[in-house]
Image (tube, rainbow, N blue to C red; front, side, top):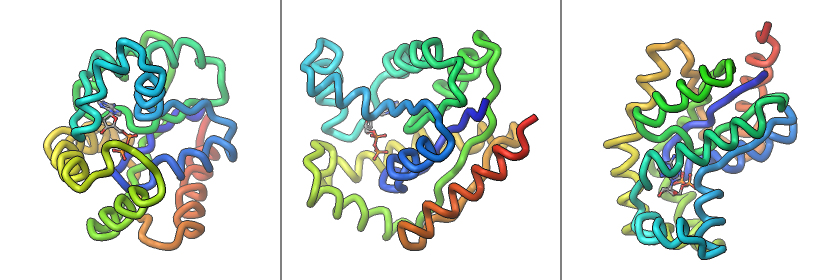
Length: 194
Ligand code: ADP
């Protein structure tokens, strides 16, 4: 199985890269951000509970996203692979994910770390804000999301570096170039699978 985490700061292009990888490698795709936005759109109790946190740019509780991920893994353990997008985002979530993998006797193939210059990130987020209607794409929420990333999520990198599972890929080019860079790297991971 090709089990991947796509990692990067807000605006790095995790969603766009995921879409491409899922098609090319027939992976099951789980985005905690998408699942949470769906809960909000359907106005479920959970959706109502997380609405203010997400609009403000903060992270929702580890247990909430943990439950979503555990269920997804249980339902997709026979897929060609699973692509985790926007998860894990804290060291505690990394530890939980490790346990979920152990429980289902699955292995993590690697973490693809999208590396983008800071100015480019802001430019992409503000551009998205102008075409989509995400409550957390206001300037203030974006600032909070970057702060959360620095304070809680950047440490996820070190967690996987220590396990030799972190693979940075620079994505400062055009969209086409960036998709090719990531896809080429993932192909090499795929070819190295036993
Ligand atoms: P982005 O990477 O652009 O910030 P996402 O769609 O991944 O977008 O996430 C949007 C929001 O959903 C986050 O700011 C956070 O509030 C919530 N969220 C998504 N995934 C997680 C997670 N793994 N842990 C906690 N909160 C999350």
